[in-house]
Image (cartoon, rainbow, N blue to C red):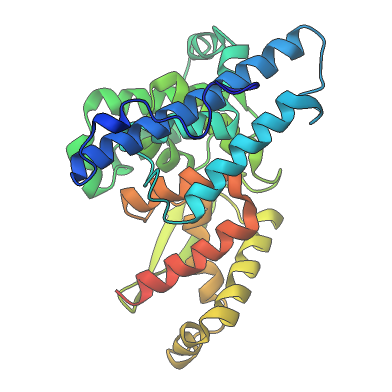
Length: 324
């Protein structure tokens, strides 16, 4: 047991009893390591919350042994995610949600606000512009590959999460794009957890990243070297924060993979297509139109690694999709 966590880095309970030539045994050991690492991370966050409640803000201010312990744990997770770590492997399916909740701060937010979600659900007394748009989008959100995991109860859960959020943040209400985020999060989270993850995601975005305007916006989407125009009505308006991300993304593509930019020019593009191609990715946090596993891998790292590292991942993702 570590001084400010749970387990020492070199502890491997039961490792000597496993046949490490067996893929199943290796998976079990990696899963165990992830479970203990995230358990330690959660324990550290709980201790930080206890200190805050006791009037000791040192950990929240980044001071003292506990703050250093949290930083070390987050650095360890970042390092594992950034390289092919044989000791840990990829995040196990059943632990994606736990990692998102801890890394985003959603877990702590949910603990601090017990009963809030139920109160927000009880606030829905009549139809609003937000609830009407949510109902329109509800059954056209789920991707084809996700339908085997989807049920009518999950649709009802998604509606409740989105409606609750529209009351939680009446300034935004509902914005298309949020539905895709919630649909994907519900594959690894419970209903209330999905709500607080959505709260964390919107809060972490720049203030003007999401907004609603009754207008149509055309997106150019690249798939297998074919470009098609998709019209999304009442979509989130492109604001300054999103525009900055678009231009940074386009510049990185031009620098790293100039052949993609040249290909667009050869097709008669005006130069805007590259920025527009990533708009749906950014607004849905890669929940659409990306494959499920791509979304989950990006979400595993997006809350801890920062925009700079993740932007390079997005560029690689575009290259892989253009050259399918």
